[in-house]
Length: 120
Image 1: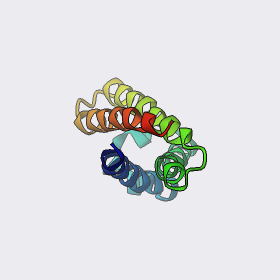
Image 2: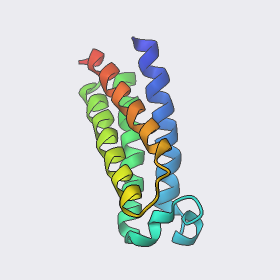
Image 3: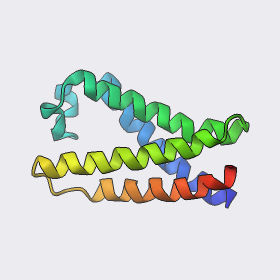
Image 4: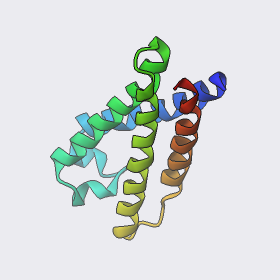
């Protein structure tokens, strides 16, 4: 179980860290080719989502790694489930039917949450 957690959580954390940093630092124009939804979202909200993703990635990795507050890994994984449900809803509301990546990330977050329960 430990190895499975690190594989799944590591992939989710890496993807979230990358996307979060992009949202936190890039301009709207630079994000637009990858994320068409940024035009309908206030830039401070985009930045906040980026920060949340970076913190969530840290929450998946550091608590189990250090043994300090390991329940935070479960909280981070559940947070990613909620985030991806919201992201999927935003895409569908805007008429974007390309939600495959969101559904994969949702499933990955759900598996990570399930595996994180072994830390509790």
